[in-house]
Image 1: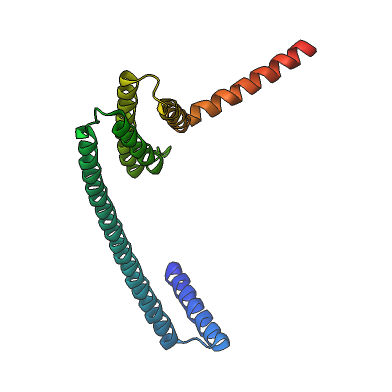
Image 2: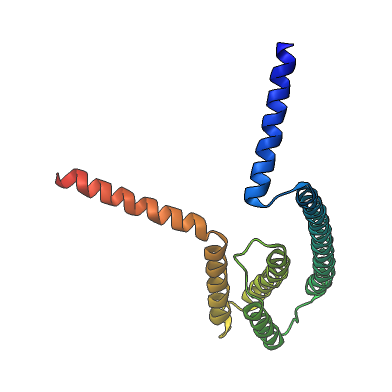
Length: 199
């Protein structure tokens, strides 16, 4: 019986405390039900917002995938055009006449200057570099042909200067990271040696 009395006292205490707090704070059973309903509605709205956010993220992912697919298609089309141009360069034949050969080399020199070598390693730059390489190799072939026909031809020196300048520029762009690291290491080495020698 003692435990029944304790349980009754505890229950009466809870109910009395609830009644007092309801009177002081203005809360009643209906209000508690309304609060519970609002909390349920808020949870439902949060779930809807989360679902919409997930849907938006899914759409964004699909759009990014579509953009990437279009970009790849454009690169393949660009690569196909460049491959056709490279095939045309390979088939290009030099004239047997020195003056015509000189004109052809001048045209190739302009093409090489207009289609420079790119230091970037992205896909588009790699495709453009293939075209530059084809032009440059054809130009070298033409310079060798002109040199074989007449080593004293007046413009041969000019064509060889373009060849050297383009080759040097391409090497610098191709290996600029290695050149930069080597330069830094050289500076550190010289600085270290001068400190060690003068201390």
